Image 1 (cartoon, one colour):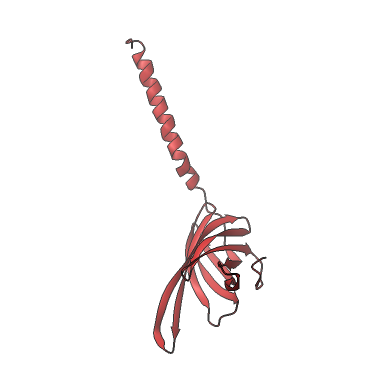
Image 2 (tube, rainbow, N blue to C red):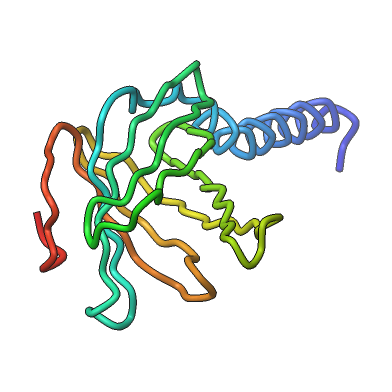
Length: 155
């Protein structure tokens, strides 16, 4: 390569490297999207592999930026005292949260602690995804502002 073309080749290489670096940053820029708003009351239906194990939960989200806390209460089938706390994160329209369960009874005063995990995507007043509940993989869907028991697993 001649000495006259060498500077042009170097400039071309630097421009190409810069474009590649920007292309690699694009997913990061997309990840930095502001979180969607999930504040308020939602109803969540969990679909177990066995339809007899479907259940419905009433959720209340208290959001602060990309984090939230909330309450998780069984509404179908009704289980006495089945109210739990949850916490989670939102990244753009992706949501993930876990629910803390403390189970105590007369035979086991100290009780046991378990967690269930949910992750999914928010789309306006609906969300859906996958989870892990009582050792089983599940799917779930939720809708904002609706109430009911939905024993058939549909809104």
